[in-house]
Image (tube, rainbow over all chains, first blue to last red):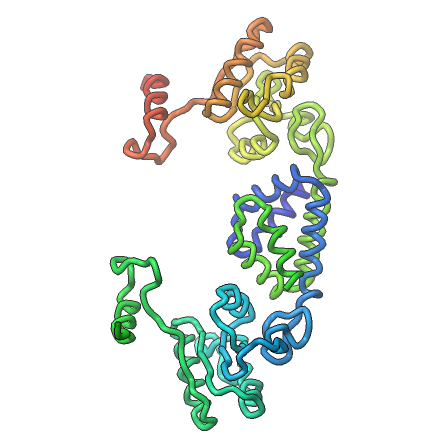
Length: 195
Length: 195
């Protein structure tokens, strides 16, 4: 069936959806009510028009500036630097952080041809010059690229006098020493804290 | 972000898609090209209009009757009885079967309030009266409901003189005795074949 095949092949281009999942979704759509399928189709077609980027921090936003950048209750002395817009959504969902954000739009990765000039660094420096920020929290992933980018920023921001910190790396809460990899274990030793 | 939340909540209503997967899909749609999102939306909205049910066998079809029912190369002496339309797609994909199909539209399940009167049994009896079928292969799942339905059909079809068979149950190819459950093992003993 051509229509089914077309839908399945489009669905398999989504992340985390293989052929079997795509077929399951397609069958579900065949059984479900039409109003739902139309609502879903409508949101998929329109998502790129309803969500843009905040011109200050670079995260997803329906209005510009985004509610975080324009929010009166946020701590303007803190800027959390992340790789991509969805990281802001993840951190916001934890309700642990009340400062501002800055999205780099990538990480330094010479192998992929991404250098500092490809990141939103000029905008960050401008924010630091004009704003009230006193600390930049590097929240890039603890990978080679994330660490490299964090170190690069630490050096870049040194002349500004702003403190640069990094999210703690270690064994996750509820995790098991037995399953922690060697690097994580080494880092959690180096970063051990006094009880 | 309201638009993102709406899309995510609609996506989580799809089978096998939890909140994390839905978020991943939504972020992917934000990054991907608009033409793809529009093509996907178009197929999702239209799938129910392009695919209907074959009036003979009850499986999914773009034309009525479906290519299997109207196909000149199919063995009309065999009718494979399945629970739902997608089972036909699954069996067709194996390219092992060249007969016809009949979709019941469910299985007998007193607990769910599904009795024989809710299945497409009249249509099956009519096909057996008019057609050239000599064997009905029960391909319902080897579950309580699938077995009950297969036994019910065996009794119902006894007066017609048509042979009623059932797909073999046993240890799957490439499977391991160690991981076979007790019922599967018991069934594979009872169904043992001469070498």
